[in-house]
Image (cartoon, rainbow, N blue to C red):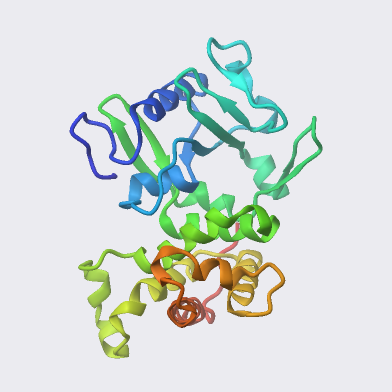
Length: 277
């Protein structure tokens, strides 16, 4: 559960976001609602590098069940040209990704009006690995854990690199802050035996935890992202754009050391049989 604020809600989400989620729970009372993206990060870590007033979530419903009774529901307005986006009566924009078993098996969604395709690579892990979040005493949802959020952000970036600068910013902070400074995970016997630099541990553990849950296709996507981030000549300027993020203070050597540590952690599990969806 995320850190609790004085009003009983989860720190990082506004009362408007919580009431929006309450509305959505009443629309799909028997389905799983899992926060992804920045709204999930806000529940799980001290997200002090940026704020989000939107909500991103995936629901365990078929595309045919979406948007359901949101149509005609008082105060809910669809966002033009974005078939998965709605504006709630509480002033919160919500991106909702329907991901039932059929959609997860297909690996993508094609939106009927625009014909736009949305890649669902990694979304099986959203539901397999989700953690419960008690928003208020009478309202709960779930959130994708940090390593799954990292994977989804890599996938989203690879799909549309020029539009996903915020994903690069979030990934930069996850490399640095995946584990808290005094977490016991930083001082495990394995890491002590490796004599790993303290500043590299967070990135290493993110890579190791992600490696333990991905399947072969997801592994290839992570490796593709790492390749872009390590390549100074990448046409999308992935490395240069990440260097501008706050943790690296414009120093590419710091970023590259974290990516190398992530890659080391990710490779440390490569001899294990990959998990399959």
